[in-house]
Image (cartoon, rainbow, N blue to C red; front, side, top):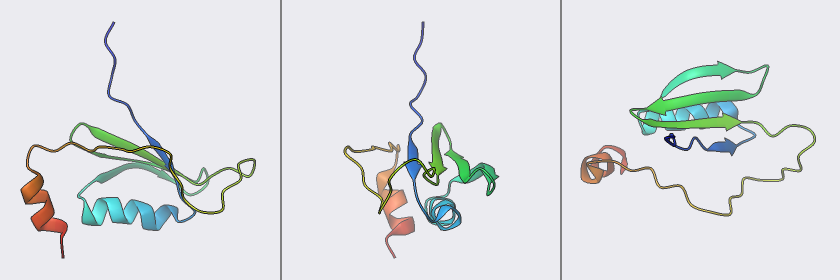
Length: 85
Protein backbone atom coordinates (compact mmCIF):
# COMPACT_ATOMS: atom_id res chain seq x y z
CA UNK A 1 0.00 0.00 0.00
CA UNK A 2 1.29 3.44 -0.95
CA UNK A 3 -0.08 6.76 0.25
CA UNK A 4 -0.63 9.41 -2.40
CA UNK A 5 0.02 13.16 -1.97
CA UNK A 6 -2.53 14.94 0.20
CA UNK A 7 -4.86 17.24 -1.73
CA UNK A 8 -6.11 20.06 0.50
CA UNK A 9 -9.49 21.72 0.06
CA UNK A 10 -9.60 25.44 0.83
CA UNK A 11 -12.78 27.47 1.17
CA UNK A 12 -13.40 30.89 -0.26
CA UNK A 13 -16.36 33.11 -1.05
CA UNK A 14 -14.42 34.42 -4.08
CA UNK A 15 -13.89 31.28 -6.16
CA UNK A 16 -12.88 32.93 -9.43
CA UNK A 17 -10.53 35.41 -7.75
CA UNK A 18 -8.87 32.68 -5.67
CA UNK A 19 -8.29 30.49 -8.73
CA UNK A 20 -6.90 33.51 -10.59
CA UNK A 21 -4.43 34.21 -7.76
CA UNK A 22 -3.03 30.69 -7.76
CA UNK A 23 -2.92 30.52 -11.56
CA UNK A 24 -1.77 34.05 -12.44
CA UNK A 25 0.65 34.63 -9.55
CA UNK A 26 1.87 31.15 -8.59
CA UNK A 27 1.67 29.49 -12.01
CA UNK A 28 -0.94 26.82 -11.25
CA UNK A 29 -3.24 25.49 -13.97
CA UNK A 30 -6.97 25.17 -13.45
CA UNK A 31 -7.89 21.59 -14.37
CA UNK A 32 -11.58 21.72 -13.47
CA UNK A 33 -13.88 24.62 -12.63
CA UNK A 34 -17.62 24.65 -11.96
CA UNK A 35 -19.52 27.77 -10.95
CA UNK A 36 -22.61 25.55 -10.46
CA UNK A 37 -20.77 23.41 -7.91
CA UNK A 38 -18.76 26.33 -6.52
CA UNK A 39 -15.62 24.22 -6.90
CA UNK A 40 -12.31 24.12 -8.75
CA UNK A 41 -9.22 21.92 -8.88
CA UNK A 42 -5.86 23.48 -9.66
CA UNK A 43 -2.48 21.88 -10.09
CA UNK A 44 1.18 22.59 -10.70
CA UNK A 45 3.62 19.71 -11.17
CA UNK A 46 2.76 17.18 -8.40
CA UNK A 47 0.89 19.72 -6.27
CA UNK A 48 -2.92 19.81 -6.37
CA UNK A 49 -5.33 22.02 -4.44
CA UNK A 50 -9.12 22.00 -4.49
CA UNK A 51 -10.94 25.29 -3.94
CA UNK A 52 -14.56 25.46 -2.90
CA UNK A 53 -17.24 27.86 -1.81
CA UNK A 54 -18.60 26.68 1.56
CA UNK A 55 -21.99 25.02 1.31
CA UNK A 56 -25.07 26.56 2.89
CA UNK A 57 -24.85 24.18 5.88
CA UNK A 58 -21.41 25.39 6.90
CA UNK A 59 -21.00 28.63 8.87
CA UNK A 60 -18.38 30.71 7.07
CA UNK A 61 -17.81 34.33 8.04
CA UNK A 62 -14.28 34.64 6.65
CA UNK A 63 -11.41 32.36 5.64
CA UNK A 64 -9.69 30.62 8.53
CA UNK A 65 -7.32 27.71 8.95
CA UNK A 66 -6.04 25.85 11.96
CA UNK A 67 -2.83 24.51 10.47
CA UNK A 68 -0.20 25.12 7.84
CA UNK A 69 0.24 24.04 4.22
CA UNK A 70 3.79 23.69 2.99
CA UNK A 71 4.00 23.77 -0.79
CA UNK A 72 7.46 22.44 -1.50
CA UNK A 73 9.57 23.58 -4.44
CA UNK A 74 13.06 22.71 -5.57
CA UNK A 75 13.96 26.37 -6.21
CA UNK A 76 12.36 28.77 -3.76
CA UNK A 77 14.66 31.63 -4.77
CA UNK A 78 13.39 31.57 -8.35
CA UNK A 79 9.78 31.41 -7.15
CA UNK A 80 10.35 34.35 -4.81
CA UNK A 81 11.94 36.43 -7.58
CA UNK A 82 8.95 35.72 -9.83
CA UNK A 83 6.27 36.75 -7.33
CA UNK A 84 7.84 39.26 -4.93
CA UNK A 85 6.69 42.35 -6.84
